[in-house]
Image (cartoon, rainbow, N blue to C red; front, side):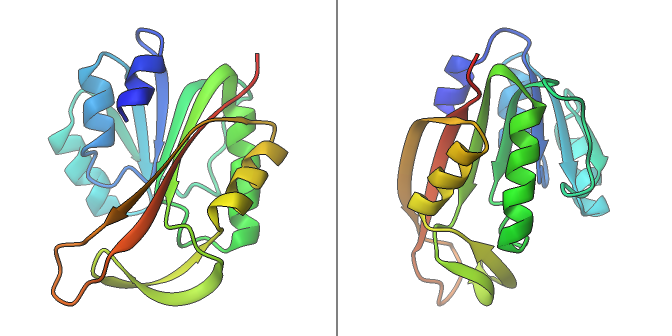
Length: 178
């Protein structure tokens, strides 16, 4: 997130997909003076986000149903929000995100890197049906959508839930060429 904050122009227009409660992503971006709009599929999450981060806008919306003009956003964040989409839908959404970015715009994408499509897992202590790509395949998909990978970070996250094991996370920053 620090890299994104440093790379954005002042007052950047940022789309936060799967915004959840608005924390920490939308909150950090809005506090830095950016124009943030977050979408989440869960009305309760949107309600919480609106209360917790009044400097940003939040709407109920499902990422595969959203539509924006090409070149509309300076940056798009999607932190673990595509895990419940089948791989084919993830590829479609990634392509759409690339179109929505302005030239020079940034996509910051995080996921659990794995070669899975529609498997039942425990994520952050909760059972979910998940799909994902390995880091290598994901970078290929981002490049195929016309984006350049500018940053790749991997981390091991240990959830604070009884019996939870470590989860690998990958954070990719991709740029739409000028």
